[in-house]
Length: 597
Image 1 (cartoon, helix red, strand yellow):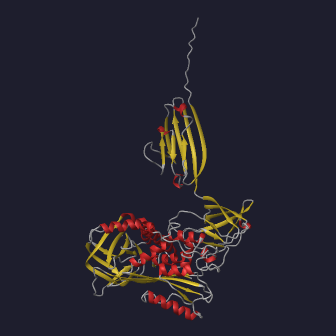
Image 2 (cartoon, rainbow, N blue to C red; image 1 turned 120 degrees about the vertical axis):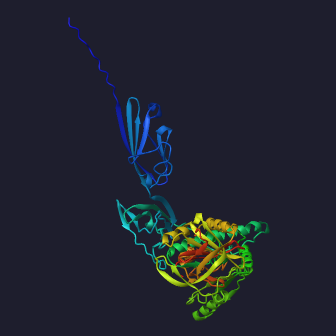
């Protein structure tokens, strides 16, 4: 009988499973992607991850903030950004199975939030985005059934528009919707010209409650007394607040004219706002305190402003003045405290615009020692109140420059060379160092009156280098810079500075709105002025003057409400930033930018 051989063929079966998941997340959120099915079913499996076709390391960080854990079982992203967009593939190889898991990750960069406003009030619609340069932004409102209408945003902030940009010529393209009505409710959003959505705002308008009209009754009392036991901490509080306020104003103003000369006196602007604070109550008081960066209910602000004026008197003279319409019945408490804290006595406005213009400009010229002789072109006949603050600074170089006239070439931002008179000394004793945090070479020049001039020189003459330094100039960074230079020893260096004479008048009306004080133009609680009459801010003005001469630094300002080289040398013959700092008061007096001397 023929034997039959039977052969058993053992086949190893390998199962390959695969899945694909689409995930959309918002920017900044955290994501944890599992490689496969529950951990218990994958013991002994070898797992590997790829991001957009490239291997992801099991140990080191990869793809920005993406890391893997538990031998590849999970891939985590702590803070998602656009750099994390793409395909994530995990391959898990086990004994009898292979698992491929794909994730397509997209990042929504837009911001969504809700705004609720009472009918009749203004609504702030934010458009938030990050970009290195100017981005054209379009605003839309949804009209239903997937349709939308483009909004007409007017850039003339002086006119009474329904919609207007809050920060013209700034990267922040937030808008102000004035006097909201019920029909304004809905969904608004801003997009780039390419159609990328940046912000979505759901606006709700509620009917105004039936309440009695605002009254100044019982809120026209005098400002609270600064208690002596709080005065020890009050001085550093004011110093820190004024440094923070100064850098905040600098940030706003530099963005308005990024390539032009800039000069302002933060101590003069804060001086007039502090004076106005005497009269402010309720929300208006809170808004001014926030703008000035002082703690709410900081009762010692006026007392410390008085002490500061007295402390700086050796080099900086500060004066305040009140001009008012004879029909405005100024409260006794405002008059008394204005004199007590600011040495300001009210003076009545005259009959004609010409007389008032001459009177005010004469006061300004006198208080700034003729550094500024003209502030107003005319004074409106309807003016009720003008608050003024003027400062005048004079400081001599402790180390004198050569008196002999000398000229040099200053390189402007566009590369053009212009010949200018310079201050030169071959062996000048100054403190010079490279401040890493600011990415600038900084020189400190000592002045009489316990003051110093700091010049911050970017690493190159390009606009981007200047902008980089300015962006890093926070109040804490500036204080740290000053601390470093005060601790360093002066060195002999060849110094060249352009002789400059700046006279600038920044747009204070826009600045006031950037500081969150739009309500002053529309109706504010200033009961401390007159409990019977309402007043609104018509115009805010600020004018500043600064000169570097062979003798020293001369500066003045008036505000109204109506960069390391091995060879020791320092040559500021290209755009730079200047900071006139009171060592005694530990705060800035003038801040400026020189792009064209």
